[in-house]
Image 1 (cartoon, rainbow, N blue to C red):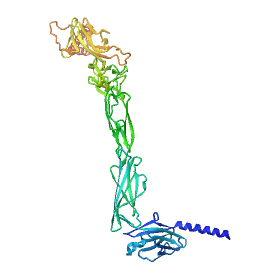
Image 2: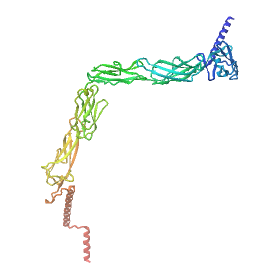
Image 3: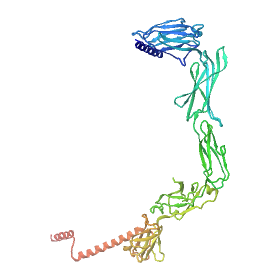
Image 4: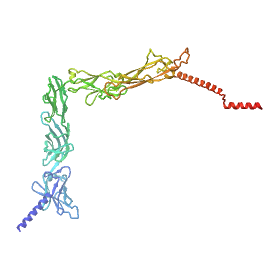
Length: 599
């Protein structure tokens, strides 16, 4: 029997705890629910048992209790139940809209002394005899006007912080609950509370109870880059207010730089500035050695180091080290033509976009830049490795033998002594340019004025022309076809009309140059000469027409042919006569004549 009684007590205790923990009032924060002066307030009791009724009570601070409403249980077929008013109808109104909840609506203005029944007293919701929950009532007036601001404080010689302030006008809490809870948020991440809230300092009182005041907060500077925002929840009322930010709300780490010359000449004075992105909020850029943005070094020595950093949140961050390096000159630049034998020497009118490069084997410190003081029309530029380039869009024979120059310059040459320029004499191949020159002592063939590539000579006279060529490489092989073979001279000692009236071709080839096996060589060219030989059949006293040209030669040839035909006809006729042979038509005519005579 004793053990049975113990188990029953344990079960009853478990049941009571479960029901007490299951019934709760909301809103009820920190065991306080607010009843607003200017509006009705609804408080919900949840976690109720469907089969049990609900009782609402007010426990006064004096120790007395009033039942202010009761609600019946909810039957299995219903979703709600009816409630009856208690001792203070109008001020308190109970409902049970669902089987598991009941709502108490409080209207302080329903009674003249209504606030007295809710100010500081305790509201109770219970399901007799086991389940019960309570929450103390605070009669409140939320503030009419709240103005909040925030800013980052970034003093140079102290740690940075966040400062916030809210000015609250006309607020009241019977229980004296006057606080500001600040919240911080970076970008779209979750917000975090700043501390446990700060009290509103009372600066004045209105109408005997409403206060005006302010609440200030100062907290550590946030960690992490981003855009920050702040809001404040004011108690009483629980309303949220966004703080207006003064200045920048962006946090960005600094990234300083400096304008010091990387290279200096030995003993040179250095003057430069530490600056750049000083972050947000702005820090202060300075040199560690001078504690200022300016740096002045007298007679700098190679290897000296200085540090540029930013004082940010009272710390030196993002240091950048400047190391003094001595400038040195570049070596004398050299100009390089294309290395392939098939690309250089250039060939006039054939080579396109010919390019020379210029560089120093030792570029110096800092690395030299290259210019072309003498460029003969080339376009200057720089390749990806920093060498100078000179480009000729078109190469002509006039470029041959011209000298281009290249100059290497850097900080050292600008302040000390320039290095000599590099130079290169251009070499350009060009095709033979031909000229036919009569050898005056032995040539009697006169060029026609109407066409200099023709010359006219009388049979028996001499023809002597020399084929001359201007080229690079120098012309080595001359050939006349038909004619005198591998010779630059065309020589006909005694011109014959039949044998020598024709066109002669002078062909020229250059040598192979001095640069090895160049597949482009030899270069070739040719020129034509037409020799017209006048026949001796012409009268010696007949004046020659130097403008006959090719027509005269053709006329002479026709005359010769006509003579040959005439001679043939005469010889053939004599032969027929001697053989007494007549044409068939003539024989027939003779027979007809004989027959007539006989008749």
